[in-house]
Amino acid sequence: MIHRLHERGTMVEIRGLWTEFPRGRGQVQVVHRDLDLDIRRGEILSLVGGSGTGKTVLLRQILGLQALTRGTVRVLGAPPAELSARGAAAVGMLFQHGALFSAFSVLENIAFPLRELKLLPDELIRDAALVKLQMVGLGPEHAHKMPANLSGGMIKRVALARALIMDPPLLLLDEPTAGLDPAASDSFCELLRGLHRELGLTVVMVTHDLDTLFDLSTRIAVLADQRVIALGSAREVMAVDHPFIREYFLGGRGHRAALALPS
Image 1 (cartoon, rainbow, N blue to C red):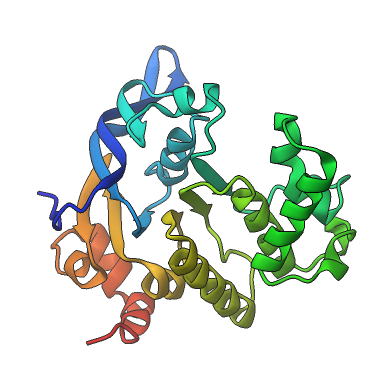
Image 2 (image 1 turned 120 degrees about the vertical axis):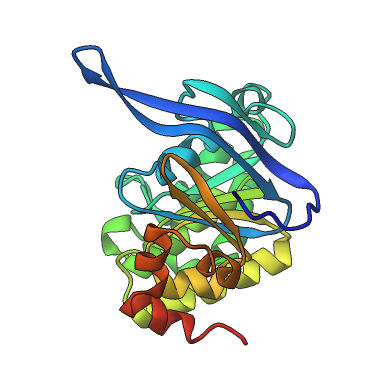
């Protein structure tokens, strides 16, 4: 049984989601089986689960990049594909390794989604990209650097600026602190927390980093057994009796990270 908190308005509604992938010889791998999930406006919801539970697949389905076998995903009341067809900038995505274009400068990477629309003059696009660059804590002196000359933390920040260039109300994060040292990870979490507060973003995050999970999450959704088995605050989720939850949250690393939770 999924524990649900009081509903405050829904940004993403997922109902009866099945996701299957072919395995050959007529066999299929079922990743999601009749999965339901509501993502509230203004929250930071973290998706956790073991390998192969379909966390990143779910992000891609919210973004409209991955097909559903059956069921529905609705963002702001509409299927993601319908929003994209209308040119609505409802969702921004920070991919795990940044996914910057290596042949583009920092400013060109940030501006790319706006340029693709071909609706604004170059000067306005440049100004918007510079604003987003500063929003993620990087000065204009970095605008013309190439991705190969950036640190891991800077790549994450540039990719975040690009994800926010269209001012989406929903931000998806795939392992946002992966590959960062502890200081850079803490700094990036602080940036995300500030942007979430200042912009009123709804954030959906996949992370394996327990410190990031406990530091940022409003709620946590645990994926196991092809569905959401627990949904709530960190303390509520840790109280659920399930083998994965005991191993993940109550093992050595989970116990140490949980000590930082407010009492």
